[in-house]
Image (spheres, rainbow, N blue to C red):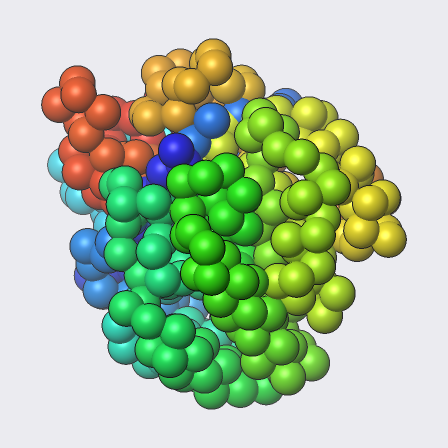
Length: 347
């Protein structure tokens, strides 16, 4: 039901001219007015890497901007080819912080490496933990840990990798909503899923400098709020810092904030974050979640939302990465797609 691209950070170095153009691109992004059904990411297709300080860290930006993303690499290529206008457009994406998706396997090294780089830059690392068993109902992002014991061991490794460094973690996109919509786990597996989520929250929150936001769906996902609140409570929302809405989706910020505020009230005032990575023009239409045309990035990631209870706007989904082959010949899920990225950045 929901799909988004997995983000693989790339280890290719970034040329020295990148900081200046990225600064210009980001300034244009912040000056633009801001405003998305879709879903979480599929399996990995790249190698994680971290920034080295060569990438411009925008003034007033508290989240870490890595210089090893697919967008940064493509910027370098475009610049070298003399495609200046396209490079400047991609700079808008490469110069803003986006989350690093952790999708299973040996993710501890990536967590440690990226969080150390963020700390050295005086910034906060952004992560998405996405490895719950029976992930994504067997769709584009199918997979996840093979069993409960493997999942807990994976969470333990992430926790150890974070140590005492500052980081924000969006926990398991779609895991709770799919447990309610009949697409996810069935029978006793539902209770196990809630228990695993609660375990992940508790383990990550052992570190005072780590914030955890449990995914809570989006404004267009028909849900019984009472059932959703109960499921979130069983999944550890009480110990989490809050919840996340609109992950990998297109619903506008106003609509997402309204949805989150209603859910927050039902959860005793829990705060939340909004994914604004491609919600600048809202959704194309009902059910158009897979690489819909004509979309745009939304607000640049920031903690300065001006909305009570909204802790941040985040780019959780990676702008420019394909949702998958939707039947029109698009790149595979998680691959950086230049034409789509240029469209998101230009609108």
